[in-house]
Length: 243
Image (cartoon, rainbow, N blue to C red; front, side, top):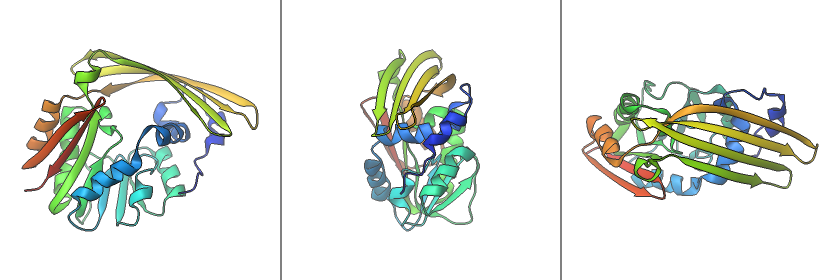
């Protein structure tokens, strides 16, 4: 995977642009934030046959580790897929993870990177239905989520990410609004030290924290007979198998 993420293009974007359209910054931040090697190990551990379907694949960081395994990535955001396609030699499809359909099955299905934060209960159950319908016999679905028990009072963050050229500071504040939902307000300051340019992006979006009981209910309701749900460091990790 090259680094053709288009960071220079962020200076052409308006400061009020929605976060999902800040794909270069999203990619820059989350390549430092997530352990994609660990995620890939989770997917391979449940694969019963060839083929991996990733729902809400984002900019393709996990895809880069799975692209040699008949990988297909799905995301609803065109800016995310533009980066993924530039960097990974795999198949990417713009579609809604709640209702996408393929005429084949996969050895494993994944939705990681806590993408579940952008789905309500019924929506996530629809995602789990899609996963079950596309799994080979014996295959597995891996999912992660923000753990409500750890984050029930919301949270704030102030993180700095740097390379030889770039400095990105992300400040976020999540305030719970009930029913597992919260409003997340963010400010992202980005600086290109090579060209001495800087810009700031601010906005907010709704996101959801989950309980382990809710994740179990979603997986059971989708027809998975066997599943394991664990918590660690504010994260819920779930693995569901077709029995």
